[in-house]
Image (cartoon, rainbow, N blue to C red; front, top):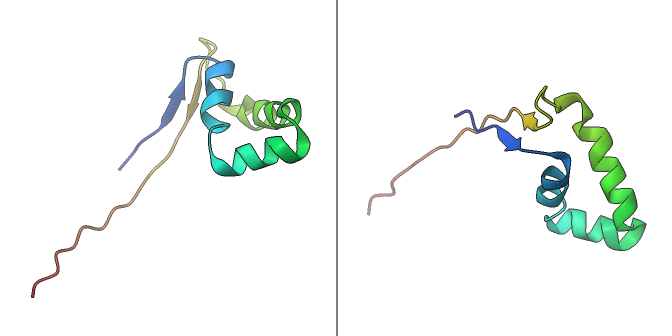
Length: 68
């Protein structure tokens, strides 16, 4: 299933990516400014002409039913 992540601007993308527990820990250790700089660098290749960001993502899901 295709499920791209789309953000209208860098600030929104940084807020979204910075909301994970791992990112919160990184901000505590290295500072919010360092986290934002790292995210900005990682997001640069995904910048769209309109200033938004789009990161392609594909998920695979397995649904199973357990019978008694």
